[in-house]
Image (tube, rainbow, N blue to C red; front, side, top):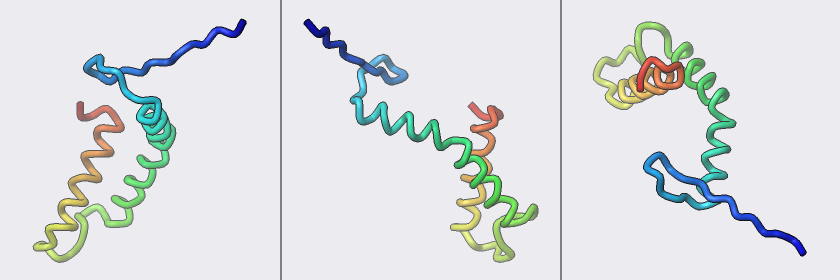
Length: 79
């Protein structure tokens, strides 16, 4: 007779996560190279001197900081 096996996935703290969450995590991992390339392209498009010429643009500064942090983390420069 058939044998049924179950897959159990765990988070970093050792707690089980759902199959749906594991699938979402796998999709994110698969998309990671494209996401990194998109972040790098956005930074390049913004220019080397910052997000915009308006020094009071907090949304642009926040995006600029987030892009650089994501790139650094993806490249292993930030843990």
